[in-house]
Image (tube, rainbow, N blue to C red; front, side, top):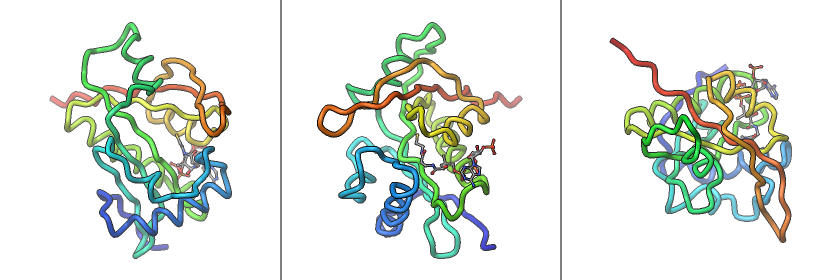
Length: 175
Ligand SMILES: CC(C)(COP(=O)(O)OP(=O)(O)OC[C@H]1O[C@@H](n2cnc3c(N)ncnc32)[C@H](O)[C@@H]1OP(=O)(O)O)[C@@H](O)C(=O)NCCC(=O)NCCS
């Protein structure tokens, strides 16, 4: 098995990441809105950084960290949460791992890369995850994320699907 590396995404990674995304959609129905234009789904003005997991020359996973937008349910729920600490917020999203490479902690390493980036930039991470995406929910809970509420993920022509919103744990304080 080739070792997996997690590193910041660059422009040249996009076609391979898009191919993986299409496979993930076929397998898991993620993202629910479909992947007619996978590249566009991976690139957005709100994106602060994205990471890829690579195995040799293959992209096997991806995660993004973005500025929250006006309709971001997780950011809104966290802003009104009693434990809200006033820190600036960023949104973890676009997380997926190639169905051929599941269960090898690639997802965990990608989420940890996003969490480390957020910690280094004094950002508190939030996210929403569709209730159906149980492996992802299990991963976030295993890494100490806390549920802050529920939302509906709207897509397509007026369709919606239930989602859960989470906030990341505060970075561990080292003395
Ligand atoms: C969520 C996802 C990124 C996890 O990737 P991964 O590399 O398998 O992650 P990990 O190996 O760190 O395992 C995370 C959890 O996935 C589940 N899992 C493990 N092996 C699995 C497998 N072969 N198939 C499916 N799920 C598996 C387990 O519940 C595991 O948690 P556990 O080890 O505590 O039991 C991946 O399942 C995925 O791409 N899912 C579809 C897209 C998605 O739901 N994205 C989240 C959007 S918010």
